[in-house]
Image (tube, rainbow, N blue to C red):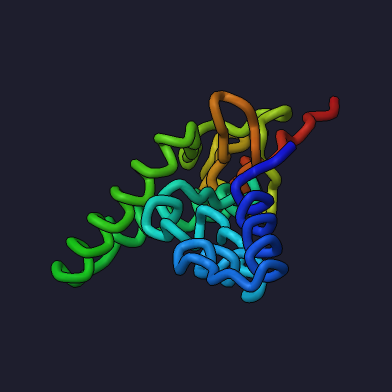
Length: 173
């Protein structure tokens, strides 16, 4: 298969053997393709701005789950903050972060105040007995980290502190 560079080389060799002048176009093409060994650069270097926005970034589910937990903590801090200026900024940032994560299918679940049942997707980090609580009841007092789901599937279990009611005293008789 012949291409234009083969024809130019053939023409240049013919001109050199016959002591004929080489046309400036053929000479420049010859220098361009062979003596300088210039290759066509990849598309990304020719058009950096068109490929810049097509690039993707791969982030693991674990890192996105951590981001969801931090966004949840930021939301809680925004509600509890005593300073109005901090609260507004934190609410805006947490809303943007949680909207971004919701677009990727992430959601967080806060179970604070709910009764604890075995089988919930939470790890009990702390347990405290409460004499005023109903006997043998267990309630989630504080969520230390939320349950993280993506498209309804568990990504990371939550962490909770629970309060237990005093055990029933058996009356012997």
